[in-house]
Image (cartoon, rainbow, N blue to C red; front, side, top):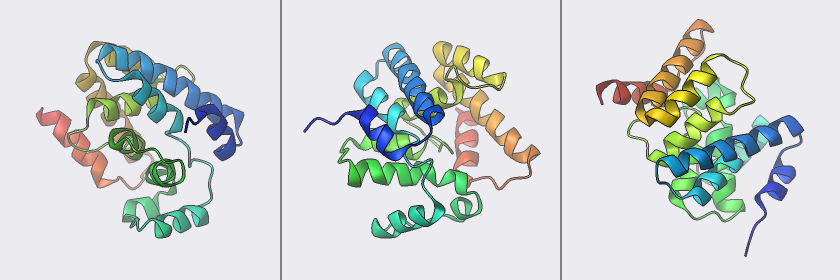
Length: 186
């Protein structure tokens, strides 16, 4: 069975802006995958599906998590913006039948990061932050670093994310801290 990923986007996302963002992430992910010798098809799939659950309600996210025995973390409950990553991974796996564990994991960790990320997980994290539609100035630097040194890019990107969360006095997911600490000692 072949699935049309762009059709799937239109099924789960209503916003043209979010659909276009997902396509730009997928395109940048493919470019980075070629640079770092990662299967471009995996990068495209993870990139285009990374925000699959971005527009679902909190109630629907709770329902999906319960149906799939996924326990929400305290951070995910406190910061509902984090929910779309694990819920999107669950949708990709259980509703769409995506079986590639690395693709699922890349969707899962594209928002918080985590310690010891795979190259594909880093590619999706960075492509999401640095796609050409991003308006914050650091996005350009993240993209430049991403094509030079993926670990340097990750360190810069996670540091930027943490600073934004601290400045906004938001809860910080422990996985993001683990990601930063892992990259700092690497």
